Length: 303
Ligand SMILES: [Zn+2]
Image 1 (cartoon, rainbow, N blue to C red):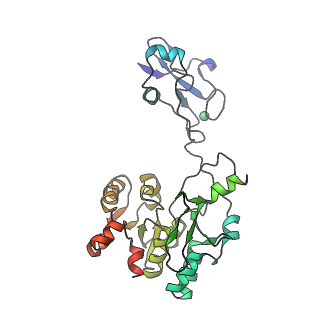
Image 2 (cartoon, rainbow, N blue to C red; image 1 turned 60 degrees about the horizontal axis):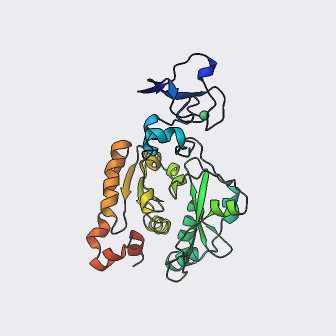
Image 3 (tube, rainbow, N blue to C red; image 1 turned 30 degrees about the horizontal axis):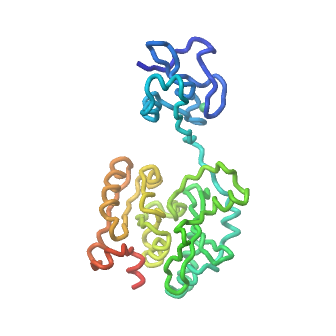
């Protein structure tokens, strides 16, 4: 049996391995031997400011391959602790400095939409540009805090993405870390692209798509919804959807991702208080060829 060490004076409260505060850490002990399991297996009583809690169950699961003897001899694996409550932000000065229509992506938009429409989207989503004419899709949360920016290049004529050879994506927080303008341990928590627009009208329905480009194009065509992008297929998580509480949402999965998003929608709806519909629009109108290519709603608007 394991339990938290009962309080018997100062000697039973220790220094927290995560936040370093003294006499705030309670160890789990083995009730047969009265010995601690490991000096890092315990809970910090600074629940809000620190949040460290490493349970015996987690510890033994992380060290499944060690036998009883090994526990004395070998150093067990301790899961690196990610502070629960700490999210780092980027100063909005970088956003302000980057605001620009000099990206290939915006040139493409100008070729397809009216100038005043494009400018409305530029302003709403605070699109930025790099000196290489890449677009910066900033992720700004509902409290107007900047999480990071995604830097992407597009062909100005076709609007198709130009990927790096490696397929990797450039991020503003990584660039700032490389130039030592951000701490190496910057703790990124992504949010939806367009999330800062949620407060603009609390009654509006919300459309969620996968790519930032699609969110912008959809916002130009269907301004009666607030359009957000997850940024990637797997970014639609319960945690991220807590900002959508009490809202009405329509998901527009890319072709080929419908089943996955439908199952996620059911899960998210059961754990948060929001109403989610999954659009079947694309599946109904798409040809087989398009389904194989994974078209999204943006491709259809531009047809
Ligand atoms: Zn602590």
